[in-house]
Amino acid sequence: SLQTLQERFDNDQQQISNLQEKCNLYEQEKENSQQKNQLFQTTIEQLNQEKQLLKNQIKESEEQASANQNKLALNTVELERQGAEIDDLKGSLKQLESDNQALKQNNAKLRNIAIKYRSSAVAAAATNPSTPVTTTTAPATDADELMSTGTTEVLPTTEIAPEVNKVLFKKQT
Image (cartoon, rainbow, N blue to C red; front, side):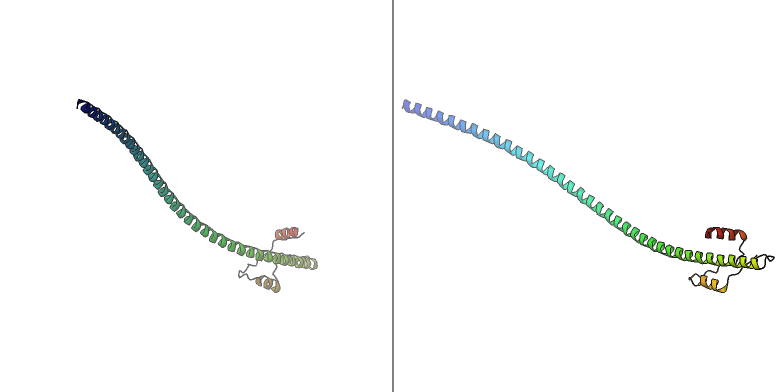
């Protein structure tokens, strides 16, 4: 019976030793699990921070996109305004070119009239050298010719000074 008790005691000691070993293993597993859990928590926090950073970046990108969209709209309006202004300027330029062409034609007609005046003055001076020529008038056909260009302005009749005749004569030659 002592032998049995001794065996039982040894057996119980063995079981206690086994249980302590299991308990130590469980403690290690628990510690490992806590470390893993802590690692997961840290990873989750990092991911949440990254998520928040990404949300902030998205928000900033959306705000920037909105600002760029507004800028684009303003630039588009400005370009359209400038385009309309350019079209107006082109129209004005065409009108000025047309007016310039009409002025060139009138200038050519006036030169022709001046040449006729000069010719008639020279002819009058040649036929009557004692009479000084102080004024000349345009023949009715010359005035009609100028009026047919569409201008409504009436040019004043002026006396042509000899200096003007010299200038006109130099330009013609």
